[in-house]
Figure 1 (cartoon, rainbow, N blue to C red):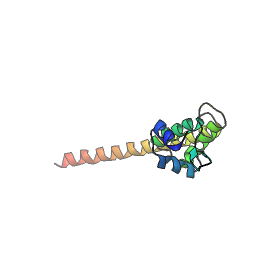
Figure 2: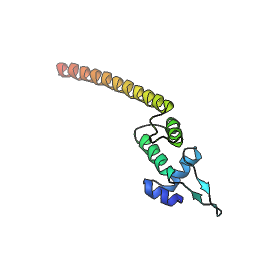
Figure 3: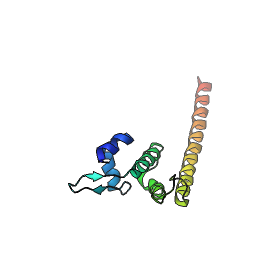
Figure 4: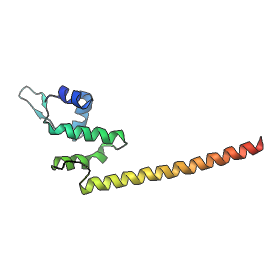
Length: 118
């Protein structure tokens, strides 16, 4: 399929697909007239990229998932490098939640102290 069709099918822009390609995440071959041509398998890859970007992964974090899909797995989540990336990201999220809980507690204390002073 051509780049426009792939973009339409995955709900993104051709510019975004070219960006993914520049970063080595999406593969296209060139037709004789120079057009990018994508295999059906790129649909799964782009869907996975977009899903991971939506939850805060960056392009480098996404590479193991793409490699896992390209290795023939039905999911990009089942390879050791993908699992390690998921665990690292989960650890980051849990640390951020802990920091936010501490900030919330501090703000509550400050509000309580301010209310007493009124």
